[in-house]
Length: 191
Image 1: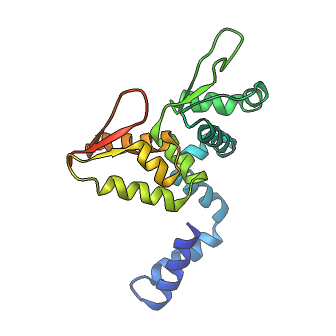
Image 2: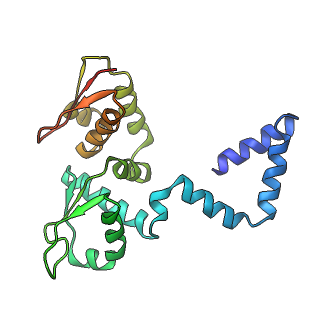
Image 3: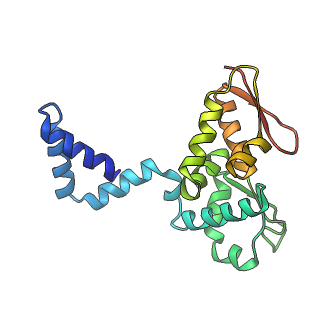
């Protein structure tokens, strides 16, 4: 957001149509920009705002997901104990799913089940260049043409859950269909 405000300041000084933006920014700076910045951050990044440990936990999950090349990951008991509240919130929000028994949480690891959470982790951890290329491939996928997850993984080095999550996001908007079978994902354009 800082880069946007910088552009606004530069453009505002040179144009009477945007000068009011410079005045607004000055008022924001004077009137407790810290509180306002926190409110704006929660709107822009609602996942990080649900618990202070979310970015750290998300990075750990993404690293494990990359190592496993799957959405099902395992951690040691210390991790589950240290981040139990954060993990509970992520699970309550249906971003992850753990298998639990009486007296033992996450006995069989956890699974990342929400494509939006995977995209959030990509924003924290993944190369902008690789993500841009993946999005471009999906955006330009012609109707009836198949994209194969293993080919994209080979070209871009992205974990398979990231590729599947992108396919699912596009499918949820009606642009294509993501394969539902177990194994590497495929996507066919339909719009």
